[in-house]
Image (cartoon, rainbow, N blue to C red):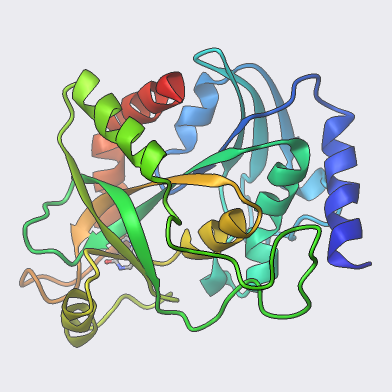
Length: 272
Ligand code: HPA
């Protein structure tokens, strides 16, 4: 089956199960899954039930789409995402974004956990993503271009919509949250960076390093979807503090700021 047929089959499967047209897509990264619990009149569809969705190799993996209303807006949220480092191709990683687009989504909010490369950041900071650097040297658009989905050479000069960034800033102000802003650098992982790689990231203009988001954002731009990205700085990136990196810190920090993060995303959805 070619990509277009795959997308349409998945879209039809989901469409039969919902009675709203989702406008805003949300990809909920580490720690932010509970936001999906706040979606009302929700329909939940397990990834494993959706034809053509990537098959999770992780035991007990709780991946699902949650479709419903958040602050009065029609949303579709991914509770759990597919990572490049898990061995999926970037076409697989980004397939759900294609399906969201086919369902009518015009804006996407993407969230993640990231390491702070900018030394003025602190664990627990939330960073509005202004731009990204694709340091994985792979691209989900490599291969045949389907003109129905987007152009062969999509523009990436406003990859993170200026208009949505402004809404992000205003929303944070409304609820009294101080936001950082910066460039997210996509590292393939799954090993954390070395101190030298983090120095390089900083030297090249990266403020945060992480292992997700960029493939989805490239495909969203290909499909003319406006993107808003937010990173939770869960730890200082390698070499900045004299301590080893530990996934436990990532989990602990994302849990510590979860409430604030959820409040911010809710406010943004309200203002979109
Ligand atoms: N590096 C890469 N990805 C991450 C990090 C990090 O330090 N923290 C959370 N995700």
